[in-house]
Amino acid sequence: MTDRRRKRVLITGGGSGLGEAMARRFADQGEQLIVADLDSERAGTVAESLGEDHLALTMDVTAEDDWQRVLSEVKDRCGGLDVLINNAGVAVGGTLEETSIEDWRWVFDIDLMGVVLGCKTFAPLLREQGHGHIINVASFAGFAGAPGINAYGTAKAGVIAMSEMLRAELATAGVFVSVLCPAFVKTRLTETMRAPDPSYQSRVERWMHNSGVSAEDVAGVVLNAVRKPRFMLLTHGNTRWIWRLRRWFPEMYFRMVMRGVRRIEQRQTRKHSND
Image (cartoon, rainbow, N blue to C red; front, side, top):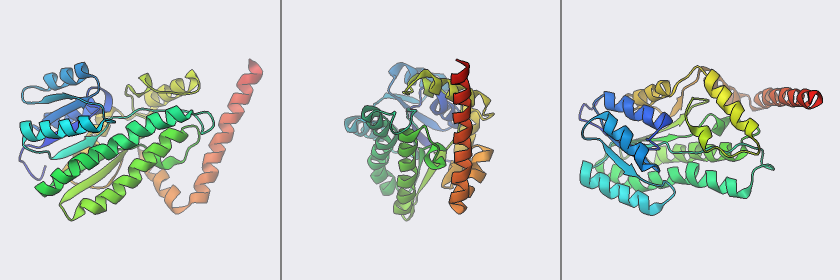
């Protein structure tokens, strides 16, 4: 990294999956990790496995009091923070009509408001320091406009939009903001996923398995973004051209999406006929 002073890195949802992979990647570079997770046992296991001088904190990213407690502990025990990674998240499958309002609120509270609370809590500290980097974990779903993941995609789109505005708000203070938009990566996300029926989980697990991109690969993208800051972090090759196509040729992109929708409908019709 350009600044070889040891960096203090806080990762929410750091007790498993992508969060754990990022924690290990940064620890391998000699950085100090603060592993925060709702599951205290997972957080402690990961922090302990990284070696000495890494911290484990238990927190609920939807709770303002927890964020204030974490801020105080980071100040007291680390003297500040260099990198905040808002990674904790959950998934909801289903169309708008299929998804309950309860599930809309659940995914928004964690995936969007959890990120907002993290940024709002630590932005004043990073501004006062005059340096720092915030990385918000969104998703390819946040800009794909794909049907069947309406609540999840909308929450992640909010993360992207908020991050873009925050980038401009903190730029003159020397604080960088990035947004990470991975597609399918094998993690434990489906363990807590809510959906109208089990077929959603099975499809997501199949796509995760076949993606060819691991959590360790995504962690490498994040590490490189801290070394050489950039805003939009795309981790899968096909999402790069999809992102550009959607921005430059939105109607063409919509037609492409609808072809996929019709293929899915045809498969479902054949399946029901065979049943």
